Length: 210
Image (cartoon, rainbow, N blue to C red; front, side, top):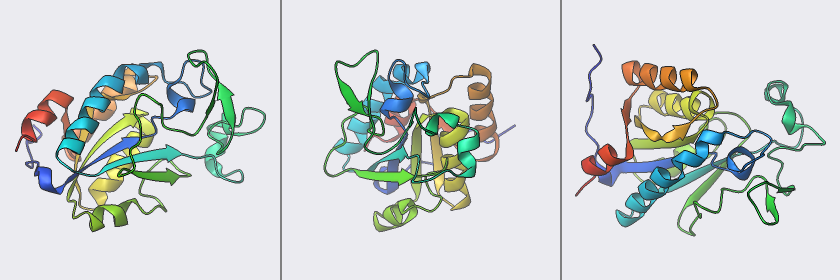
């Protein structure tokens, strides 16, 4: 049996990482749409508000297509023209938006504040070839809470990278989403078994009370 509570959460050493809650993943009709992501907006927003009240770091990651084709594009051909998914500066109209929106931008329902961090990445994991780890070191963080989309891809990769950097890691169960319910469930089960903790937003808020 896995240890249900392998570590406690110290709010003063904890940061929140919101993975890829961008227009091209969340909006209706988006090229890489994850419909279930819209159901996670409220718990993610409440968790962001919690971290801001506690004056703890909030980091938004954005998946960016990059200037040219990489190996990753073979699994996401929507990144290529003419779709131009997740291409910086590319504007797109979605079924649930009144006008054109920046396809790379974090959704308006989760507004990025001036004190927040934004980390752009060309690959799945948010630590790979980015400055995320340096940000966390500067903020004296030893624990991260990871939420966003997609559960078994960018969320899992980011959470596992955090584990391998010796960061205590929590995945927010009601704050992550997938287009495959079985993969979603299996990813959370496996992560809790050997890599970190899986908590819902209410449970996290209870543990982070001063």
